[in-house]
Image 1 (cartoon, helix red, strand yellow):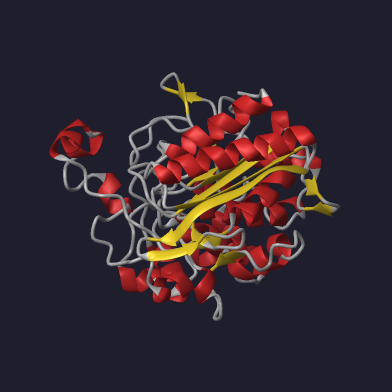
Image 2 (cartoon, rainbow, N blue to C red; image 1 turned 90 degrees about the vertical axis):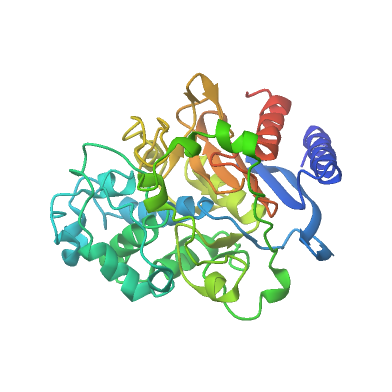
Length: 384
């Protein structure tokens, strides 16, 4: 890092330490690359509520839906090699998927949450890969595919997993390891399904406190009926505790990836840098625009916001006149995670940013401390 970048890193360290001291974070990591060079590498705070060990650079955080971007990248690597066509039916690669009216759903539609397959299965199914794959194969769409979008909060795991498995003959966790993590040199810090022996590196989560009565009344969710698609996609009583080792060890590539900020920022650093970083190419330069092209930006039936979505990612740009943590450019793409984690690429300015946290906020799009961090980095670099 140059002198200017070292100054930026010190300022980010100061910011996140303040967030910790003010009680807005317990533990946090931040990493950023610009034009293929690391410009931020900072961490602060403790491993979790009641775990006073200090966060280190190699601490692993469960990043919830930030996992979706890593899983999507695995799919795009296969597409870049000609193994997957975005406009082909999913059933071309996964014949069983055609059941119950899904024969015509394309890869692009399924990966941009337009398939109507958002209803989550029971907890015991989510922890069993083969049962979950069968669940998606046999699920009937909730609407005519392609006519609406509704966030596949949990079911995305087996949509992308089934496509990757059918097209490659490999489990998606192996594709992530063999095609992303190991080539980038982050094989020890990018996991979808925790292997044995890493227990001492796992941060634990503090779930967001229940909203006050005033907050509850002000929340859009307070107005939702019990049978709303939001609750079908994200059941309030799912039965899953994401601090439990059984959940950590399962492969749920929509919700339980364990990463460091370094590993996420490096992956997106490649995608922000024409597909290559440190001499390792993930995808061709031409693939970046294809994989991040917005497919749909109409109001989401689950999240009730008009979030722009590409093939497996959420894009930047203003929604309702306000830009979120991914920033002001629609060409930026990545994924936030429930509670406040995020990782994204902003190719127009060569930037990638990753934030991992363990004090979950009442956040769907990286609002709160995460937004403050991402905006601060862009402002300091003059790209906000």
